[in-house]
Length: 192
Image 1 (cartoon, rainbow, N blue to C red):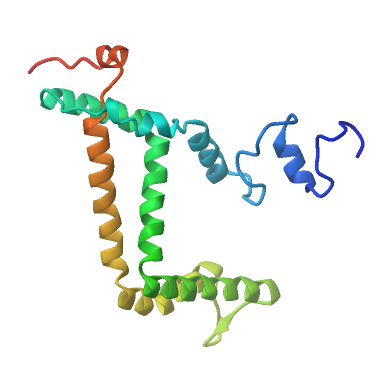
Image 2 (image 1 turned 135 degrees about the vertical axis):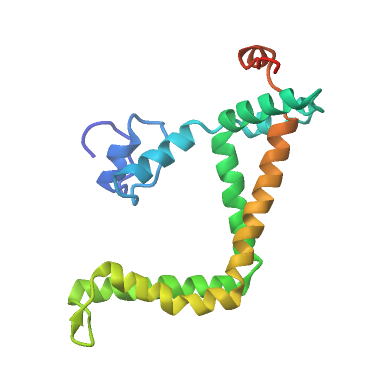
């Protein structure tokens, strides 16, 4: 190991060593993600993540005085805790997947079909009825093959359950989590 002694693990891939930055810092996003908008978005969400102690502090919850205060709290808390709310949403999605084995089977069929398409396109083009299918058409075919599995697994109801539960959990938190005294002054709404 040339350079900094003891700062890098001998088995750390070069991409991770470059992403790690100075010694002692954590890698924010795994090096497996390709560079691009998704990785940038994930890095921004991680940087904006608020402490969970602040997020769940029971002393900061209270009943709003009026509808105007509810609107203020909703607007400010959704902005302030946006990254935390994304993780709450992902947690609800994960809960829904874990508690629905048929949905896991449907996802396995879909991702298995996509993986087979990926392997097939590495070797040669797929020809069906004398016509060469583009990659987009192949993934559409994988979705079409997987659709009955998603339908049998109740994926539609799972999606609406996750959306409803997310709205209730996040809406309740945002409406009842009190603003800092300085934050409330920033968002004064004019009476109508």
